[in-house]
Image 1 (cartoon, chains in turn orange, cyan):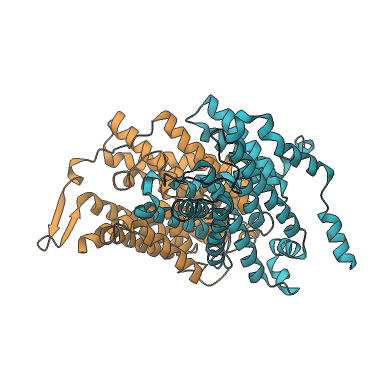
Image 2 (cartoon, chains in turn brown, blue):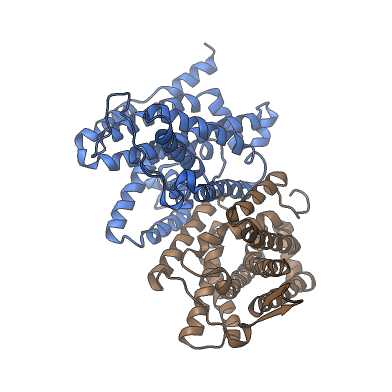
Length: 287
Length: 319
């Protein structure tokens, strides 16, 4: 029981890191980016390459992956995404589906369609049992929770305490007024998009072990990221965090107790929540 | 006849080339008997695209899960043929009725919320049904698909043949009927009120259009038509598998519609023909990675602006 809860929390934290970038870019630019999972996939594959072929230790890989994917995100934002902001949602959806298709086929071409495995370092492989096995914690999942929690705190501090965070929040609330106050909104967009993609990459790298990694990753988990964003709302970090935890726990528990219905529960829960509160569970009223 | 009714009737009048194109389409199975299977396949997805156009192009609902209704139609007609009655037309009616009910229920979920919420809910419904079809394997055959569907002859006379000629005519006939029906629908006052809702739901409400009732009606109709397309597919192939609910199918049909142009009835037909032709050309050249080129095409199309695809004379200008 507690073990399930623990696994659910780990899964949820991972989903949060994967989806938080999507939530911010959606709130900021009102851009529906279905290709977000592709960044996570790129992160996962970068991890595999770095740790397997270049033999770089696991912990050093993580920041490298973050930087690589963030740079990729920045590049794509400034060349492609920026032109799509003012287009209708249908165009944005098709555009990002197109990018996803390209990413899926591209990875398939270069790496192959087999499932990739990440080598974990020895110290993360064990498992600790507490209270006569009532709570079993895999060390790797423990590490995931620790890293993700740390990231969450850092992000929250960045958003609340720094000057950039204030600019970002201003731009989310009202882009035109923010621009009128002399905030370089384009630059804010670029940095936010890059960091969001980098986080997705990091999530993909850490999650490769838990979620599995193959070329259809972006399509398989697209719905999960979207659930986090749609249920959590796009204002602030608390909403997506709670939504991700809820989703993680519901998914793990659902698959354990009623394996026959598995994903069924998550989807129906999402539909019910969205019909009940179309703006998301934790949003600040309608915008 | 009032002047409004007269001007609507004038708009609804078919152009001469539409007769010509339909006559040509109906002759296709004669001309190219060896391609009859492909013809019926294209016809079916054209019908599917037309049903999506009704909600996307005319009513402005972005849906990523239209395959839910296609799949529901496919499974219900296949199951009906297998267990109750092998008559194709009866099966089609059943498929349409079942998906209409499903559409009416689902329509409640797209009334509120932003584009994102609608995307999620429609996608969620399709995934839900796919999961359901996967898990209820004692009815649907699960991941192996529903096999052993034997259809009776169409109208009690025309047996389905191996080369698919009957199937092609059957599909073409149903699609033509739906096309004629949709002409009437979109040129009626009802159709115009849909466009009003698409352009501005708030104002539509203000001038006394009951937005919710119209959206429910059109969503139900579109679902039923998608169900017909799914039913046709299951009947002509004698098979229904999980991929009828797939995300790819919903995305592909969106793309077709965008290629052919949204908001006019020929859009779905043109899009389906172009898409399938592209598909077979590219996958003949690189079978495994054709989605890459499809993706590239989508990205470029969206960057350049999809409304310009059908207007080649604007290609030289800057957006």
